[in-house]
Amino acid sequence: MVGAALLTCALLVAACDSDMSSGATAPSTSPSSPSSSLTSSVPAQLPKQTLTFGVVGSADEIESYRQMAALFAPLNRQVTVQIQSWPNDVAMMAAFREGTKLPDVVLASRRDLTWLTEHQAVQPVDQLLDDRGFDFGDEYPRSSLTAFSSNNHLDCLPYGIAPSVIFYNKALVKLGRIRTDPPTPGQGWSLEQFAAAGRWAVVHHRDIAGAYVEPSLAGVAPFLYSGGGQLFNDTDPPTSLTFSEETNQQSLDRTVGVLGRPRMSLTPEQLSERSAVQWFRQGKLAMLEGSRDIVPQLRTQLGLEFDVMPMPSLGTSATVGGLTGLCVSANARDAATAADFLVYASSPEALGVVASGGYLQPANQTVALSDDFQQPGRLPEHASVFTFSVKSMVYPPLIGKWEELDEAVNPLIDRLLRGRPAGVPRTSRRIDRASFGVLGPTFGPSVTASPSGSGQSAG
Image (cartoon, rainbow, N blue to C red; front, side, top):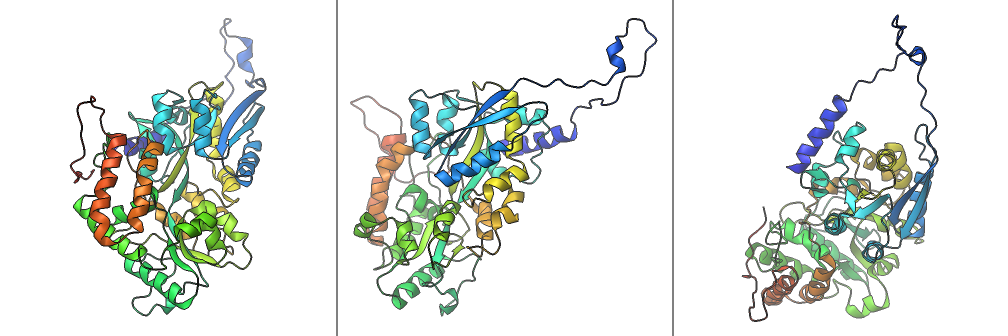
């Protein structure tokens, strides 16, 4: 695997870093020896530099990156880090597509990696990191390195990782009061235990919804992967989703049977009034699928007591989520300085500054297990669920049409999750056909094609 090769390479380079002499040269009797060799060499101060760093997020998130970047102090150089920011990934990538120059270093989502590499907008970072003796050790999940790799190169250094988990309102969900097979807080649970928690909440509280799973590919993917299925029919390149594949059909039957129950999910009318996060904050939603980045706004809600559980299992533990990486622009003004910034920004000290803001879940597992991220004494109590869910993350293949795919299939997924198990086969076939229209090969006007309806599971 590419990830294994990169990991091994990094370890070997770290162990075999070039031996550079730091001692003074002994006096030479040769008349041709320069007299300067008799004195210690002191590197001259390099000219001042400006490094641009691109990030996305809310004002508070961006401020945490600004604080971290302000502490960047490489030896013998005075570097000013200039922050360039966008509200979200979509806005940032739209700017790049319209011709905005990439910052020297940019924090980019894996979803956008295909565009960045196809347009040669970024340069591989593996050699830059190797030259600096960067030691991956056991701190980065191998899967995250593989996910940011192509053509035997590490395109970006994993920085943030955000597995989907289940948030629950502790006033509405009492796990210990579920009579049959109650789940243990902070531990794994089955789909049936998740369903029981939702039923208990709506039976014992008026005017609330039991759970909200986003009706999207990202929202439903954990249930398919956990049931033993795959999301796409191939890995390189996929041409269709595989919702109508037999294993996925069984998982969808079970999932729809839970989420489609009366009062279990928020209605379209409720979602037109407020977002799912807002309903959760107001105590009208018992459980919510989400990731670490919503924690700071939940903490600001007076009286809200919440905790987290892993995604429910249909057989095996599985989840999906966002992955961001530090990428170096192909046209960086100084690639060496940019690489130095990557090493600095990924250090425990620098990552701790960002993680303490509560938004970012570090890909570096040492920092993810530290108090900077776990934040003992603050909600949620079982923050370790975020960290240990990383082991269950599944990364879909890289595609360059995520936005088009979401637009084509998410309305159908919404219909699927709001329906009944009897409607799963028909809607699943429609989802697969819609995905083929986005991902499938292009034919002439007189030729039509459609997926077989039973995609081959990716390996």
